[in-house]
Image (cartoon, rainbow over all chains, first blue to last red; front, side, top):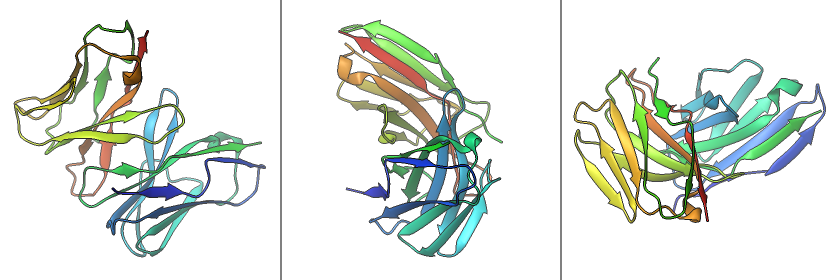
Length: 111
Length: 112
């Protein structure tokens, strides 16, 4: 089975901190994604990567950056955390442009 | 940008009832997926439908892809409390990228 592992289930950070969310997949998938999920807004794509060192902006990239130095690892970086970035963050990977496999999610609270 | 509209947004039923949720778009998709998400967890893939008119069954769940590949439905027979969750449909973006487009989901509650 595909396994996508996010480094933390719950995080509490202070406004202005630099925050790193890590995601690792073990199925050699080319594509990796970061979404945030908020009530009433659904899943919104922040960034995705289709190869090592390649990245593309999703629908809401402002305030975020990403890093993909190795195929199995995709990191989301909040450069200066703000309270409006409090959310559930979901990492996913896929081999094709469908059938995404998700991690368990990171519930981030910025205070 | 392609959109997927899901209905209803919320559904609360009693154990044993049948239900159908819908996923509609004005765009054609090469495939659609259905996911179920439990509170505090990531979505889990249930099924992928690829061919127009295709019907797939997964125990008490029946998935159908519309003939024109613009819509899909999920029917649950004799719902159980364990079916409670957020049901999401998703389709591959047709703009040549590797993105998935997600609907906002149907939140299903099955009461014992």
